[in-house]
Image 1 (cartoon, rainbow, N blue to C red):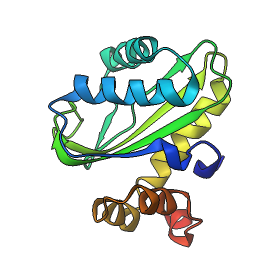
Image 2: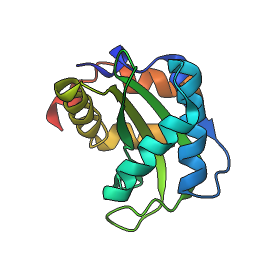
Image 3: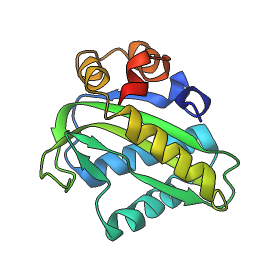
Image 4: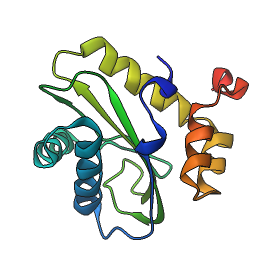
Length: 155
């Protein structure tokens, strides 16, 4: 699975200020609702339920909140770059500024796992993470995330 298959240009957002994790998840849920025709509150509840199991803040300022939704027809990704990092209860206790939201259909076990693996592998690429943090242009962020970079294979 390639990120370009699930991340559209409309799915990349830059936020100046978000006060906390709950507000961030709410904003991403509303953005996802517009892109997927799903209910924003249902998306938010799904994400909160997953976070209750353990934070999806991976460390190094990166989080991958995710969940499965009935009625969704395909895996969808939304990327957010935050100008001001927020506390996300990450495993390393560092605040988060790069967030990749993943939503999958309720029965999409393998596709959901492939998307998570793809994003986790991608966001371990130090040069990419640095480049993402050095731009606030949504089009550039999308291009960076979806470009076939040789360094991704080395990660």
